Amino acid sequence: KQEVTQIPAALSVPEGENLVLNCSFTDSAIYNLQWFRQDPGKGLTSLLLIQSSQREQTSGRLNASLDKSSGRSTLYIAASQPGDSATYLCAVHEAAGNKLTFGGGTRVLVKP
Amino acid sequence: DTEVTQTPKHLVMGMTNKKSLKCEQHMGHRAMYWYKQKAKKPPELMFVYSYEKLSINESVPSRFSPECPNSSLLNLHLHALQPEDSALYLCASSQDLGQYSDYTFGSGTRLTVV
Image (cartoon, rainbow over all chains, first blue to last red):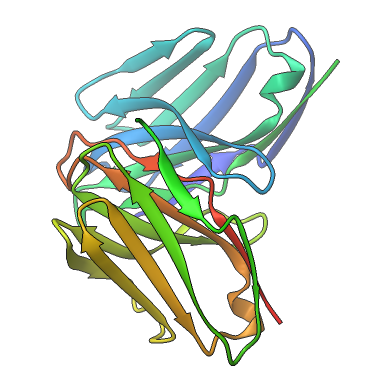
């Protein structure tokens, strides 16, 4: 059974610092990996999608890497801002069962 | 239109009530999903529809009854719920069940069962 783990569970940084969020998964048979942002009590906003054949994706201040063989992905957020405060979830699209499995999330607080 | 719209945003219902959650998308996506999310936990898959047919039921109790009347609409009918069913219910869609699909989520319905 696929297990997705996110470390750390919570992170607090001063504004301007770079953020590094980690995601690991146990079964490398995945189609893709997607990073989401969730504000309290709200839905999920897709940030980046990395296909299994790709090594990284970039969008603005966000960069996500994927090492499928070692079961790891990292989300980098450059020059953090208070508006980046949210919970960040990674999810793998499993080949077996063809479904999305989420990690527990990293709760980020960026202090002004 | 790149959104998944969920209504209502908030719902309070008694344990003997019958209510429905609605989800709509106009992106031409042919796969739609219901997820349940408890506080401070990740979303958990409940149901998957592909081309309006139920593809996956993650052993969800029968008091939750999904319906996909057409390719743009997904409903979740609720009956005789328990207080522990209180959660954020999220709808999502993707182009299809293929490996290159990414997921678009709605803003959710916050359900409270009293």
